[in-house]
Length: 223
Ligand code: GLP
Image (tube, rainbow, N blue to C red; front, side):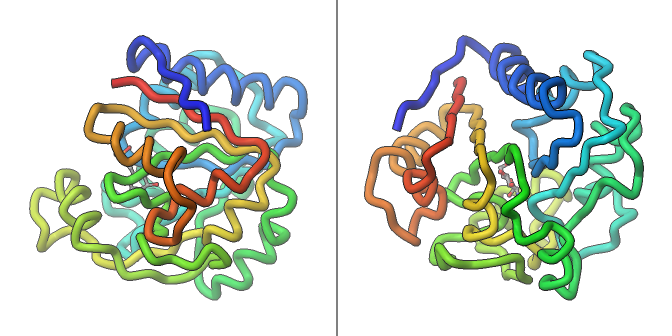
């Protein structure tokens, strides 16, 4: 699979923001799946600055930690701070995975109706919180986070002890039903896993490798 290498983080952010902007302008009623983490922060900043019309858009987040949703590091807080509070999206148009997860999937209408899904990638090849070993058929569910992911995400919580150990994530099967998928990755520490995922064996040991089976995926990287 082709990995589009961009000059720098600004170009990565604006390129993916361009894709979202085009989607919203061509299809104001779009359903989007949105990521969290440090990589998409620039994209959200860029989107906010463009003052797009989000009034008909429906969003679903890829995943949430199982934790107090008012905590500043919850993904709900992240989305409010970086996108929702700064656009005209209707609060009841933005959804986060919840239990019972089958009801969340019903709300998404499976995920067949998702027009555009933006993804990041974890250092162990996870997408959303589908850790290595996740079934390619998996749906939205509660998961235990891997040691690696807890370690990686502890930078947001100050210590491993304070980092959530469980999450609710869309499944790989759920994500794959999106009509278009864009994966963004930033930093040399992601380059090796990105190459393995995009050009190595398609295997449940590398969750992002499932994207090789999708016919409308674009991958953008900068170091
Ligand atoms: C978390 C999220 C993923 C994200 C990954 C990478 O684990 N659940 O959706 O892709 O982090 O985050 P970062 O962009 O901070 O490297």
